[in-house]
Amino acid sequence: MDTRHMHIFMALAETLHFGRAAERMSMSQPPFSRQIAMIERMLGVKLFERNSRNVALTPAGEHFMKDCRTVLAQFEDACRDVRLVASGMKGELRFGFMMHAAHSVVPQLVQLYSEARPDVRLVLDERTPTEIDEMLVGGTLDAAVTFGCGYTPHLQTVLLTRERLRIIMRADHPLAGAAQIGPAALRAEKIIATPVATAPALRSAINSYFSAKGIVPNVVFEPRLQHTIIQLVAKGLGIALIPESLCAGLGAGLTSGTLTDPPQLDVVLCAPIVSKNPAVSTFMQIGKAIQHASKSI
Image 1: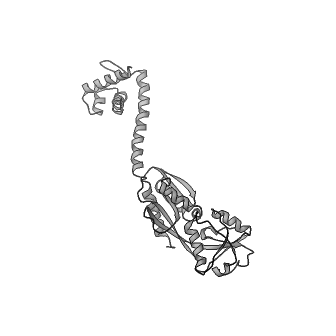
Image 2: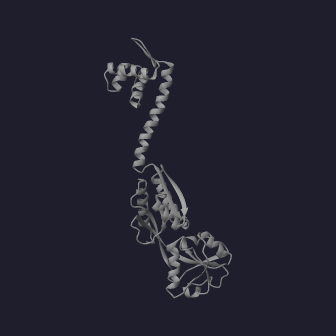
Image 3: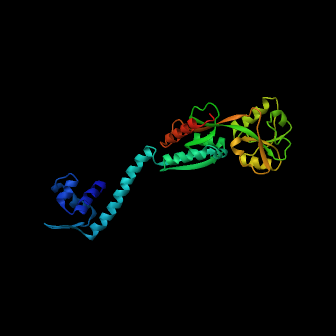
């Protein structure tokens, strides 16, 4: 028994008239009557009481009508939903992002996408840049916000913004309040920086900033997370160069300063060039809209 049999049954159950029910199904009455008889034989129950004048549902028929309505409604929902998923209007999108990007572009991106595709469930996953790269390649993320890292033939990328690095230190540090701070002034400082294995682009920018002046930075601690770096600086264990989006609201004991010719890092929205998830295309389009609206690019 299939959904067509259910529709045939429902036509008679709702009209209680063989002629009108057959017309609804675009059938002549004799074949329609044979179909009703066949449905009753398949189920092994009598669904209708009928005589020359009247047609009525049996108790079994009334119960079957309720169940058929539920099943047909669910089937119609399934057919609608599969079309919506195929068009990217419904489904799930797994979105990864660097922790500090939650202080800049991620909230706007999530808001705009949620408004454009309210039936797509966004699964948010904070990760380090290296983890993001691995998960994009492995297919466990559909899209991500991370640092741009040059040539990536397997990814489509949209430049969302550029982040300058700033120096953070305790408020009582001798360099606090300086108009600008260059590498030479930091030659003897203890540096707290993210490891290369966690954020290659960020660590490379920090190393290059010093090496351009012939200085080897004295890196004493290498926490994976930027928030841990901030906490270590607050304890007076060193200074750090971090993305400027993290410098708002550092707390009373910390301050940030402007670097001379500060390093800049591209912050990009990326996704595999070949994606099986149709919800990704709209996500990338919204990224391009943010790019065009950004005054920093």
